[in-house]
Length: 152
Image (tube, rainbow, N blue to C red; front, side, top):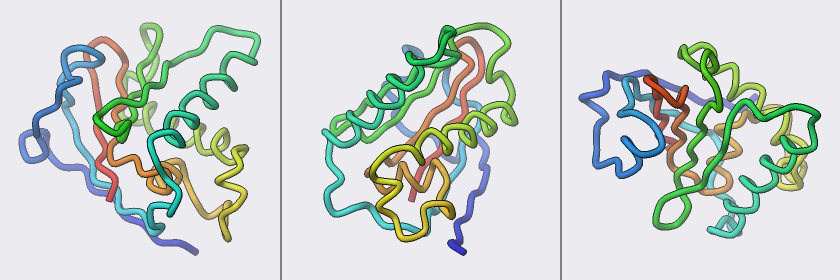
């Protein structure tokens, strides 16, 4: 089994210049560092990160209802993923945000990169983000709450 770790740290300890806070989401109240047990894939690049976000968005559009969140790849090299709820009452607790990330694991497993992994069912969404070269994932209710995960 692959091992990974995470730690939630107070916002002041993890704060850095976040150019997207205040535009896509409020300043994060909580931060987490996720240490993945997988390396960044050799072929991970901006285009693969963009394609991943586009692919997840396309999966949402195939459903017969409005999406509960929007995904964005931002940053100089598209290394930051942003996930923002589309309506009130969604992803408004840390537990709901983590549940969203768990559900995104299932969606990510349907992508070609996940199936190329030696142990695809041992990986979670944040591991997959690491494989693609994402260094940060921010989840927000789009109103007052944001949680930011640094991926190492």
